[in-house]
Amino acid sequence: MNDLRTNKLTPYLFLLPGLIILGAFIFYPMLQAFWLSMTDYNMIADAEFVGTTNYENLFQDDLFWKTLTNTFIYLIGVVPALVIIPIFLAVLVNQKLKGIGFFRSAYYIPVVTSLVVAGIAWDWVYKENGLLNYVLDILNIISEPIHWLTSTQTAIFAVMVVTIWKGLGYYMIIYLAGLQSIPNDLYEAADIDGANWWQKVTRVTIPMLMPFVLIVTIMSSIAAMKVFEEIYIMTGGGPLHSSETLVFYIYTEAFDRLNMGYASAAGVVLFLITLVLSIINIKFMGKDNTA
Image (cartoon, rainbow, N blue to C red):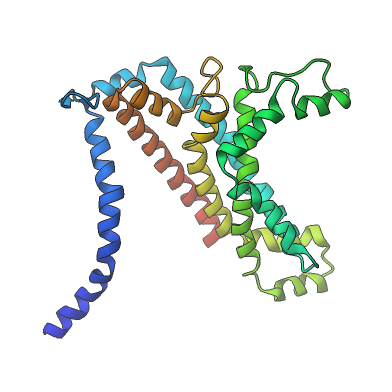
């Protein structure tokens, strides 16, 4: 009887260290954030319970809705690129060619490049007299310089390009692992049927990669929803909040205005939106994978 109990408890003992870490660094902060969202707290005085007042004020705040809209624009602009383009990069670097390791490393360099360094470099590219305007001017595409980071029309899209550039190599590696798990028999059968390169990619490679597409979609969606560093370094949320996302808004409320309760309410809303998006991705894309 004692041996049976010991056998039942053993798996939980192995799980215990992980559960303690998750509890200390994930679940407890989540519960604490939820509690703070219902208080008036400025990190100086004691927290005062105010119920749903923070949520009511949040949903009446025009700036909150603007940053939420910017966040969804960022999501729509970034995620499709980070899901689709790395597939073709992975297909290219999966070829058995001499020196292909160099190209794999080259595509991955942006991932390991410090975001501060990348932000400074791209800031130079986007300057009024920077590289991008110079090239566009030589090609006679523009007649006068474009203010990429200081225009309300282009700032958020300019930052999107940096996010995409920095994430391509990371998601390419995930797809590359998926490609190398596909049996060669499938490609040999496609060759026998007379399939060309494009047909093999669309009818063999991509369908077999769908579980990896699901992973990349969820990961890139979460990353897009919580984008912060690029905005902070390159635009500071400007001009006129045109590039300010929800996470940047939360940061400003929490650490610039010391309105921790209000910022926590916005954080809870962000968490719920991200959770819903992840569930939708798993439900619809996961259904395709099991069909």
